[in-house]
Length: 257
Image 1 (tube, helix red, strand yellow):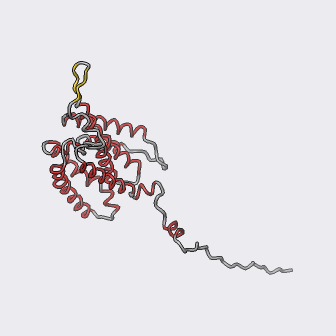
Image 2 (cartoon, one colour):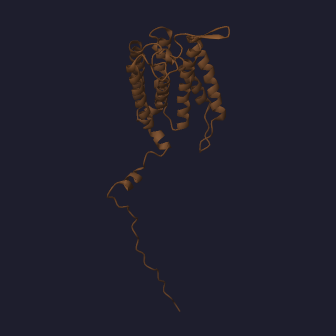
């Protein structure tokens, strides 16, 4: 299995390349706005951190401490825009951020320690998709393409970790490979040893998919939200209202001789 330094280094390099590619090739939107260098740097950082997220199921040690502390501090900052959309003021945002920090730092981390098994379903493709969906919901904003960029960076970093684990599960003796018992336990869709973990993983994935699909910005982007006028017109028993006609009289002018 690849070590912590290998995971974080590789995902960082991949993240830098992904952010640079987004800055160069990401198209402009309708109003001519382009993706900023700051957004691309954040995208690279998200990919880098996602590269060590699968090690949350290691139970103890450096990865859990590093990841839980960093994610707990980063998540509230990424949610500031969403807090503002809820009409929250500075003090309310600070309080919400503190609560989220404590929940992630001392709650979520403990859940991973107690209820996950190393190389279980947390090391899987459904888990990678779930983490990307969480990132999509956290990083609010007006531009859907930027949110998808950041979420895909998280997915990419997560998959870099899984890929490295599979590569390190193969030993080479000359030209002949030898597969370790851990081979195939990282990149998978299903855990044959635990039906409950499969059910739990896919249930959470389904909930996250529904939450992401119901996101207002996504709905608005694909015109899935009807305007109040459209809803009124579609309501049964309603008669379309016509603007009142204004009675006009012909203008007459006196004729003088």
